[in-house]
Image 1: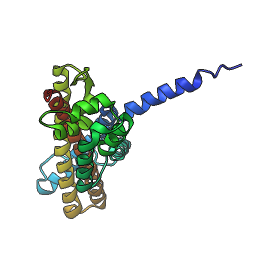
Image 2: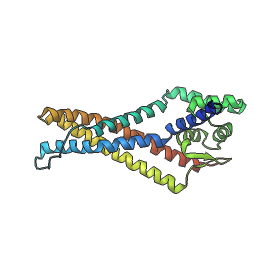
Image 3: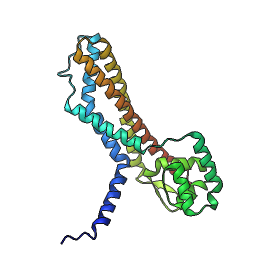
Length: 248
């Protein structure tokens, strides 16, 4: 007879771990990196094809076709971007302002549960009440640190009185610089692919080159979304550092 007594707790624990991993920067950044890497070859080839229209002396790429690697790259970028959008939150500035004022004016008299609910409604994150109290009781910048925390929460830990970086300062800086580099690469690739694709669509004579141009423009649009996602990751690292530096 199969012992299923421990299955539910085991399933729940590992399910929670999977969900936690999905919302961490590692999962999305890995997808973005894979997508950018797979698409880079075809984008460079399309840019060379576009350049050859104006300078025929440029060596022709060995092959300028949309291959399986390109479809895989598009899929990875698409999944990463959809995940980012799903985890994002949009609301009007006026609504956020009113909710912020209400929380700051009343949090001292709220029960722990109500305090958490109000904070989660405003910032879409559910910390323990000692974290909320520390943020909202900040002597000079309660609104600022309250906004920093949701953005940088993945990269900080609670030390009992305030927040510290989850990793060493050097490793935190290294990861931030790596993401900044990927952001810049994505920007260059996005601009290059959209410019190259546009040139192919408008000036190329062969129908297969025009199709390649259209696909390259689509790749460029996805690259732009990837660049935005990397930029958000860079800002998360910056917010985490600023939060730790705001210790009262």
